[in-house]
Image 1: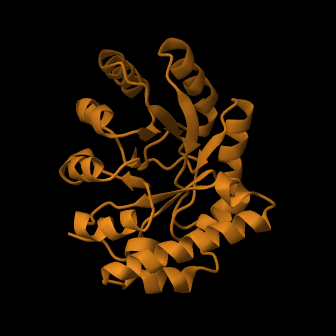
Image 2 (image 1 turned 120 degrees about the horizontal axis):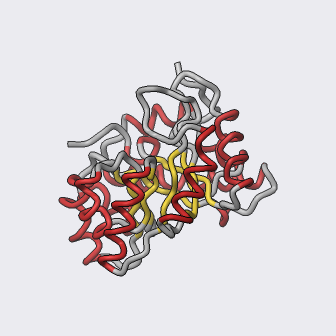
Length: 241
């Protein structure tokens, strides 16, 4: 069972919510918990960006959260995002969309066109295709490199021992804007050592942004130094569609 923080009861309650107003209430609570965790660590809450994960949820469930002031969202799949977000981006200003799921090279054109940040850069071919597409569009996206901190064979991400070389290659060979690192700790383990490892890799490579922490462990991540937390079920409840 996944290592859990003191928000377990809160997450379970949120996962059962269906009323659209409940998501707005949960958003407020999550922001409060982020603020408390930041203050406990001697950090400013303003240094932590909440990426609200809206995967599998329909626009009508997302809209109240946007209207409550949330502007940064995360999606796992390019095709699903293409169905939902262009009309929302037309309707609401200053929305920022992060791709937080695996990116296939044949989806890069669509991804670069729609997303503002891609958090899952994890292999040389993808780096090359992203660089070519951004050059063709004259569009420079912020990129995070996904690090497989648990060295899990079934999970995407650069292995920790290869991270320094991969970061250098992306910056040197493709002139990519690597602004952050991202990780998803193994489900059954204490996430703190993984967050600490990610922070160490970032520090020695001069990278400031750390995307780490999800619904079950975002408080731990904030106290460990996360600049971005990816929270979905604790806001929207169970998966939609």
